[in-house]
Length: 254
Image (cartoon, rainbow, N blue to C red; front, side, top):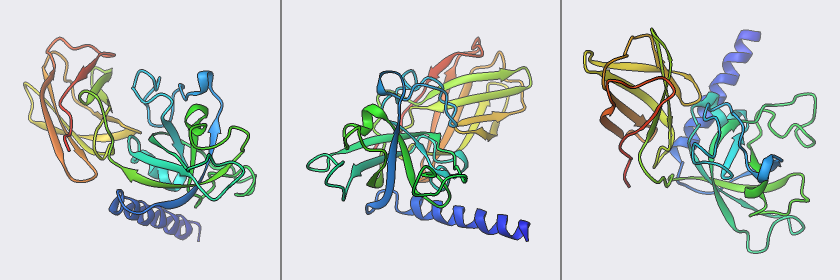
């Protein structure tokens, strides 16, 4: 019975994420939002997407943690959402202004609390945990939780895709950030000067890995986003690249 329940839950999450992807630039949907108090009102700490310092990753204050059903096991990392506060005359700012956010973290469920009081991210709630600075652009800080509407939008990025190298001799990993258009990466391949194209597996968030020694080779990357478009950046990293370094490739164009 437990296995059947888990399978059904997993199917529902996949079905919901497919609907979100299929309508990622479509109509507004209803959800809720709270904010997290961090230094200078921004989200700056490590999150479940693996971006590290969000200011260095160029997401900063315009970042959000997503509830389980929206986070979709990390595949939604990097996606962009337009958020606006609605239907609350006391807390929503006049005119219902909107803000664009990037999915950078996971808002974990708390089944010890009800979905209406503290368990904002319990399945199947659709919820955004915003930075205080971004939240204050759509609602009053005094609010604990506000009703919102959201929709997927194209990500506007400055510069190219960024590739940060980590790993070890036989475990190569790359973090991909600053992805334009859909923002959501679904497949990655890497190619050294002495290899063919090697498919990489998602490790966590937007960290992708393969068990190959790629040191002392210039590296090229093939990145596919959820809309189906693929971008190839040749010789992004030189032969003398080092773990911990970040290199910039091409960018998806409108």
